[in-house]
Structures are given as C-alpha cells and as structure tokens.
Image 1 (tube, rainbow, N blue to C red):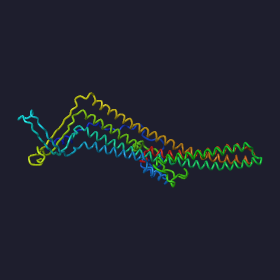
Image 2: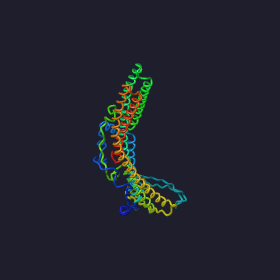
Image 3: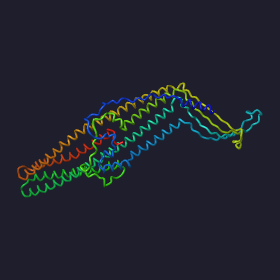
Image 4: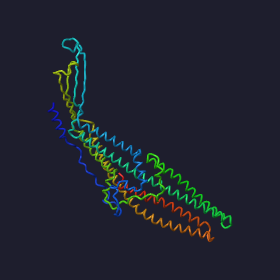
Length: 458
C-alpha cells in the first residue's frame, strides 16, 4: 500500500498544468502622460500624510480611515476571500481522519447454507484519507491559482476604496471650508450693505436721496440675506456628507474656518511615463482578475481529462466489539476511482468557451481601466494649468471691481450719479468674491483628483 501511495504521489507532483501562458496586454494609451515636466513629488511614492500637509485635514482623514463603514466592509471582504483561498488550496492535500463503524445483520434462512437464519456482526476502526483527487492535469491547481488572483484583486479593490475615501474625505472637507468661507463673506457683505442702507435712508430722510435709491439699497440687503441663508443650509449638508465618510461627528477642533486657513497640498511632478498608472490599485485589481480568468481556462481544459480519486485507510476489523484491537484484526483498503468524461452533451466544451470569453472580457476591462486612468490624469493635468490662470486673472478682476465700487460710492456721495452705479458695483464685487472662493475650491480639489488619478493614497 505504501509503495502504491508513493507512486501516485510522485505522479501527482509531476502533473502538468493546462493553463495558458499569461501575457499582459499592451497599454492602449500613449507612452507619456500629457503636460510639461515639472518639479514635484511622484504621487505613487507619496503617502497621503505627506501629500495632505494641513494637520486638521490629516486628523479628519485619519478618523475616516478608522471608522468608515465602506472601508470596513472592503477589509472584511478581503478576509472572506482569503478564507476561500485557503479552502480551495486544501483540496491539493489529502485530508486525514478517523472513523469507527459497527454493523449487525440478520441473514435469512434462504441465504444460508444450513437453511437456518443467523446474525452476523462487524466492527471496524480506520484511520486514513477519503476522496483525495490526484491533480494529474492541474485542475485543482488552476482553481487555486484563480482563487489566489481573486484574493489579490479583492485586496487591491480594498486599497482602491481607501484611496477613494482619502480623496473623498479631503474634497468633502474642502467643500465645507469653501461654504464656510462663502458664508462669512456673505455675512460681511450683508453687514456692509446694511450700513449702506442706513446711510441711504438717512439721505432720503434729509431729502438728498430718492425713494428709488432706498428701494435699491433694500433689495441689495435682502439679496445678501438670501445668500447667507443659502450658504448656511449648504454648510449643514456638507457637514452631514463629511460625517457620513467619517463614521461619526466632526470634532469641533477640526472644523474648517475657510479655504484660506488650510495649508496647501504638496506639489506633484508632471511629464511622467504612463507606466506610473500601473501602480493604481484599480488597474492592479483588473490585472489580477485577468490572471484569474486565465487560470480558469486551465481548469476548464483539465475537465476533459480523467480524474483520479483515491481513498485509503488503515485500521482493525473484528466480528466482536471487544476484539477490535486484538492481534490478527489489522486491515487496510485502497480504493482508487478513475472518472473519464465520454459524453457531456457539449457541456465541457461550452464551459471552456465561456472561460475563454471571460478572459477576453477581463482583458478588455483591464485595457478600459488603463484608458480611464489616463483620461482622469489628462483632465486633471489640463485643469491644473487653466485653473491657475483663472485664479491669477480673477485676483486682478477683484482688485478692479473694488476700485470700481470705491469710485461709484464717491460719485454717489458727490451727487454726480444715482445709487444704481453703487448697486451694480456692489453686485459685481460680491459675485466675483463668491466666485473666487469656489474657484480656489476647484483648484484645490483638482490637486487631490490628480493625486488620486496618479495612484497616490494607497
């Protein structure tokens, strides 16, 4: 029996694999990322703690990583798939166990030589392995390889969830900071226009200003009051969205005061090779799924060949329970089973074709992931330059509008023009200052989007 088992084990170890050779598809994107080269850090080599310089923002992101339920679910999925991998790998080795059995049977008269009914008994205790498939053609190894690749894909998917959580929390925090800054600006505008309304009312009472001037000033005050209420509601919504990511309330000590109070993020390098995209966890996950589909083809091919299952045991056998372990009761058994598919109604070939199509789908998904990543990086790089130009032009616009308002107020006080000129200048300046807040928000959000698109944050 030992010789037979040794021979079968050697055959199993020498078994072939029918998996196709894996070849990574060529990336269907240009060799270099768009945009000029520039000094800065490489996103994939920069931890999020180094990228997000502001200490309050870092503390908020750490809270999200500790308490976010989506990230917790992703981590649990990794553990679940790891258990499934161990389960699949366990089929490669025989499972040993012990069993005890007893049987008493009445033999009828017509089944005995003497014509007299009798009772027989048999008791056995065995130790061995049951139904161990000898993996001659790599079916189980292919399934194990597929399970391992699925695990690695799930692990990368969990990293992708972390990257999305880091960037999403940062952008949500910036949005709350932008609305808080806009709210303060609206309150300051409301206060200034309320003072102006008081002056216009006094001028009207003195007979200098008209009722039209008074109504125009009142409309400006009410418009500012509407904006204050609008931004107060937006701040509440922003806080709720951020706290959902955090998995708990936002600590008051880390509540943002405004965009201007936040430290800028680390500058990122440009002019990189497209190969940096391969570090993104979503692309790595797509490649692991492609490798898993490639391994499934090996399992489908092996299904066409014989499957050998071996059962073996050593033990004792006795007609009496009390004599199980006496001398002369030793027994052994080996029961090999060979199964060869002869006709399956085309099912085996259909399964093989399906696995090949799954591989093609996985390859297309992998290529699409690379194309999507390239487009995200290209968009972020393009916006990085245009947003900086917009901010520079906008700063000049605000300076010009402030000077316009100053001149309009002087002309009104001098009686040269009516209050309409002041009203128009106030509206223009307030709108420009509000737009500037959200333009800076867009510029900072774009930095985070670029960091994520380049594979940072894992």
